[in-house]
Length: 293
Image (cartoon, rainbow, N blue to C red; front, side, top):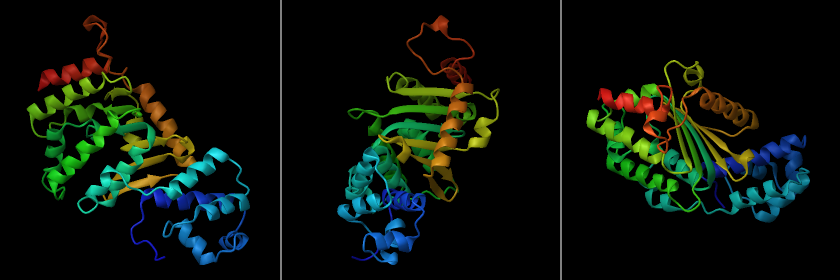
């Protein structure tokens, strides 16, 4: 079987986990390969996500490394046997690998924790708001309508059966950015309020007056699957997305998000009576920004 030239984040993550197990066992790549009758080169390719691994060999590797965590092993097997196909497969020729990786990660998650400082998070955007961003001069977005369609299709995760819990902390500065003009920006903020009606969606605004956590964190999404230790933190960079999977990074961003949520305004809660809202409330701040448009 030839080596992969395009490696998905799921494939890369499986290799990362197997390498982590080997290193935890104190074995070199050569020693690990020898224990299951494989060449060092073969094991290296597996750990880099360049080639697949048969389920029997994966289980043998786990035994050789002394791993007895059955839920974890079962999840590794699922990752290995997954075809990587879903609704996003129809977009492979039109969308980049980062977009496809994002859709696949979201398809298997139980929770999404996100922070954005200048944009409304993609899963919470209206089509016109998304279109205005992609049409911004100098950003270099190609096939803009394809990109808008893909993002709208991603949002089905919010209304699927057994949707993930979604918690977004959005910096106040993002509320003031009028992408597409006042009308589009106003509709976007009203859309946030409507999304907050969903029982599994929590939206908070991080005000200008809060501590500096938001400035230090950058934009990120913590994608949490059924087994949280296999979660992924996705960082937005000017050159593309960066995926963090090591335990230290997952713990650091979990702690960072907790700080963001603790220092943000109380979540949008449309069930409260109008007189129950104060100036220190996410809905009240959104309403104030709407008034300025």
